[in-house]
Image 1 (cartoon, rainbow, N blue to C red):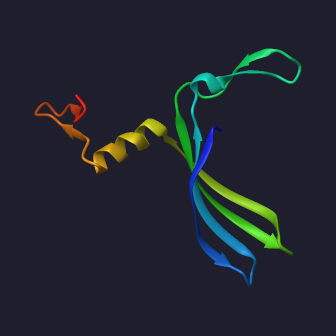
Image 2: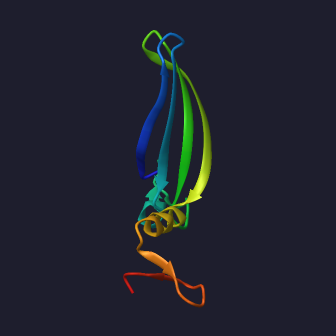
Length: 105
């Protein structure tokens, strides 16, 4: 994982010690796939293209410490998310042949 972003704590129940949150865990692929293992071997592993987990988490807090975490991840292509952001901002449109075009072209 290369980044955690856009975390939101949408519900906090202090009486029951429960916190519900959302966030995104990004995986960049690329150079982050190449590393040395603890025994010194060169390793290539991990995603071959960028993607992200959209994740909902439920935390149980007891005596000021997180005691349990439940999560529900959903894999989403990072490229899909970026394309949707560009569509919302008006940078992407479809031409007469229904091909996706960007305002950058």
